[in-house]
Length: 189
Image (tube, rainbow, N blue to C red; front, side, top):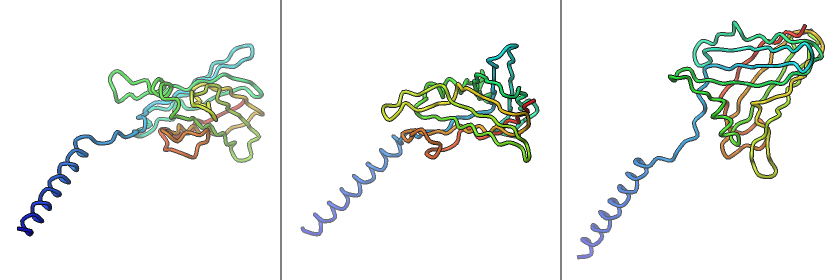
């Protein structure tokens, strides 16, 4: 009778394991997917008179990017307020990804890095002016709204990276993955 009991225990154990594995398949753990972004638009408005509003857009970021309207033509030594708008035009109507990023501010961080062209004296600083609601040591910057300051005339590139950082945001660009990583041309004259 002992071999029969052992066999029954093995059958029961395998059955329970099969049921447990089945439940995992039916109730998968949710994932933190990156945002789908097809269009990025930067809008900068000068804080000087006459007011200058500059808009640069990159289309088709998910396929063959169109940089034909991606140049920021700015004044030297000027302060601007900035905003970035993100869309997913694969959806109908287009999905406002900026609203999603704002809603999930505790999981997102824009990183702006200006690099002057070789030999160019141009400079540009970008500071995020919006914050998330992370508890101390936060809140941390988000970057949907910015303060931009140009320096001397010249040219360069403004790299814009949107970091997706669910449960890891700490105010730095290191954790997470990138939802967006693109460059805008900059002409300061």
